[in-house]
Image: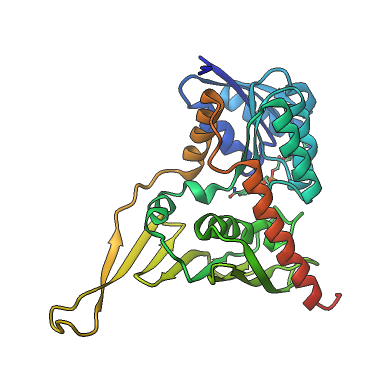
Length: 320
Ligand code: NAD
């Protein structure tokens, strides 16, 4: 097994989210934040100085200085920037959504295979402490309800609400249901931008499971929840607080042999910073050449379903 002593890493795009990638890498044992690149030179310098790294304004100049890199630029640049590093043999963590098009995703996946490089896609909710416990309780999900709503952000508006927010839930649902998608019915409403700012999708699976997913970036409040119904249990998870509640059907001592009752409550979960767990898993995958929990193929599949949702929305939305 190939082991790396000190891993030189970099971050491209140190805006709202990328600064946290830089912070977490800078604090990791046996990892050196060798450099950060940002198209905005003042921002690159500010974050580089904060963590004792070198500052670049072009991703090209960081290639060669790092063995692994996080790509946290706006989504439109993910493919071009990831390609630069993969071509040089570096491993990449690409923020979600993986790319804008499936052709771009396919290109990166095949380039990584050719170069035996690792791609991890930044579907951070997989690393949420409550999701990790939830996964062990899901058996035969039949109905899933998701709500991911928040006030309007001033960033990530280069993509619509499906690629911005709903894709988080799509990835989680695909990973939990483990059955092919058989039908999608979706609707979306443009409110502030010219693309959907609030969307609802009904995603049906060959297993019979149905997921009803609502995402909004024009809400007054912030809520991120998933509820899963299966024959023996109801599971309710709050992503923000990393809390999980589980209710199960159990025999009712008051009605021996009669109808069962529902019993349950809060389940113990390990709360940790999901980004820290995600980047730790990426570094492990790089060091030990392991398949990452969220591979390029899985990032591509979440993107494929998200694009199908967007296609269906376009079918129902009159042009503005
Ligand atoms: P942001 O606009 O705050 O930051 C992007 C940064 O990239 C800016 O500093 C900008 O100057 C820089 N940049 C732009 N083009 C560049 C290029 N070609 N090379 C180098 N730097 C460049 O955006 P953000 O909110 O941090 O989002 C960045 C990415 O992270 C997006 O893909 C977004 O979808 C993703 N994201 C993921 C999550 C999550 O929960 N996993 C949350 C937020 C954002």
